[in-house]
Image (cartoon, rainbow, N blue to C red):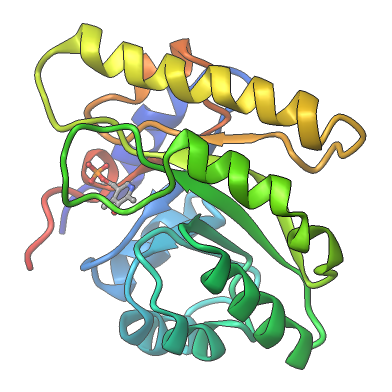
Amino acid sequence: MFPVKEKLHEVLSTLQPGVRLVAVSKFHPVDYILAAYEAGQRVFGESHEQELAVKVPALPKDIEWHFIGHLQTNKVRHIAPYITMVEAVDSLRLLREIEKQAARCNRVVKVLLELHIAEEATKYGLTPDDCRRLLDDGEWRTMSHVQICGLMMMASLTDDQEQICREFQTAADLFDELKARYFADDPAFCERSWGMSDDYRLAMAHGSTMVRIGTAIFGPRVY
Ligand SMILES: *Cc1c(COP(=O)(O)O)cnc(C)c1O
């Protein structure tokens, strides 16, 4: 078995104070998750509803599950009963559906708005202007079963560190702007979810509060 506990401790020892770890366990087996759990990790990220449907019942109840991938609206009702945070909200339509399904479960689901800054055309997410429009529109203020807690983004897959830094900084600047314009009185809007195995050190240098790390803890994924 991959040395999950050792790798987890290695990663944790490199996190800046105040930065939380989401251990990204997608495509990894339940016993890997349990190994991290036994080493103290409680927050795990997954990106497929059907994988969660198998893993959640098999694992301890005090795990905080974050949905980190692209979420189709027709999948929301399956995860609404237990998901703690949906990290990649990329449309008002998805936000409405989370509100509706969380209300049915009498829960409040935390969400992050997913920013699209990276150059890859295939990535999902809201442009900075989409974000401003969504928040200007104001419908989110009427939603009592979703809590917008901040922004999430993925930097471009590139070796160009300066480009990665520019993208993280763009996200950090937008966070500050949105915080001041829409969430100045809302302490819950505080999360900046950026940084993965290969770039989390750069991300922390650009204001990340939450890193989503898979490979560095669990090893390579077998798809
Ligand atoms: C898979 C995934 C990660 C983790 O990536 P690693 O490179 O394995 O650390 C982080 N964020 C998102 C959105 C992912 O889909």
